[in-house]
Length: 105
Image 1: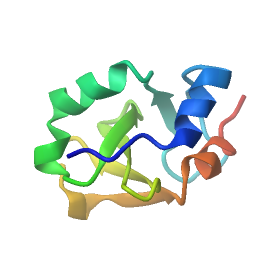
Image 2 (image 1 turned 135 degrees about the horizontal axis):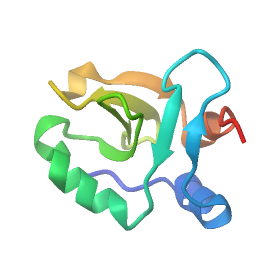
Image 3 (image 1 turned 90 degrees about the vertical axis):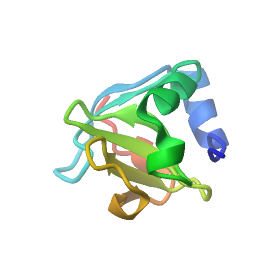
Image 4 (image 1 turned 180 degrees about the vertical axis):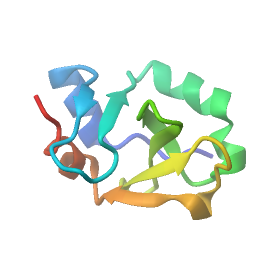
C-alpha cells in the first residue's frame, strides 16, 4: 500500500500549482517537475512503485531518470527509475516544505 500524500504537498499545489524548475543549490534534485494530484496515481502504477520500492509514493521527476518520492513520514527521497529499490533511496529533504523552500521562483 502506498503512503498518503503529505498535506504540505496538497496545500502547496492548491496555492501555487505544479512547480517546474530548479532548486537553489547544487544539491539534488536540481531540476524538478511536480505532478498534480491527478497524475500521481497513474505515475505510481506505470512505474510499479509498490513492487519495486514499497513504502514510497512518487510525486515528481527530475528529467534525468530519477523520481522524487515521499515515505510514510513525509520525508522526500530520490529514487532511480532504472534499478528502483527502497534501499536505493537518497534522502533529499526532511519534508516537502524544506524542499519547496529551495525552489527558484
